[in-house]
Figure (cartoon, rainbow, N blue to C red):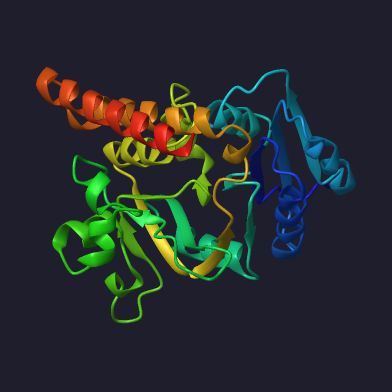
Length: 289
């Protein structure tokens, strides 16, 4: 009798190189003892990283796209090609520390209304990335994860709301309810994911995780942050191969999120957001050229 599948890991790869191997090695180690499968969706990589998946067959399968269809669509393809009730979404430049999946699963299964759980995500140097956050708004650019004012004034309410720290747990709680967690690593209930149609494929790259969590919460689910689980995220391995396109995608997705969830009816706010994001994008590209 075939064992019941427990966890399906989905990774969307674009020129992640040897980082993809490290990610798959960490999955193999952390999921040992569970019945699992993994799907790597390759978005037309040109660095040969897609061929590295062969070493992990048949546990890990490869789906090749002829073109780069984006992160959101790639995830949806991977989820559709798998069958486990829990989906572990992980970037190819991330890797898990021992016990991460079990800690995430324990919290997901302990809370029936929870659709997604996310771990503490660290930079390779051990710095906490701030992967649990408040819903993005006009203040996110100032007090968000990379905002200077959040670094200088971390005690302000806007700073604490935009990036949730471990101090928010208190009393030794193993998890806390948050607005959203980073798609660099998250464990998702398949039924909840499918109930909202998965990721919105209008997001080519960035902000699709915030959008997904917001739509799930609108359906009555909640999202939790689990600092007892840890993932290491290299940040930007794939985007470095096309930096200008990544910067544009970030700002286009930020506007899409804002127009969809924050300024649904206000043409003035939408116009202002569009102009500010357009100017910010131009400034970044100008200074990076």
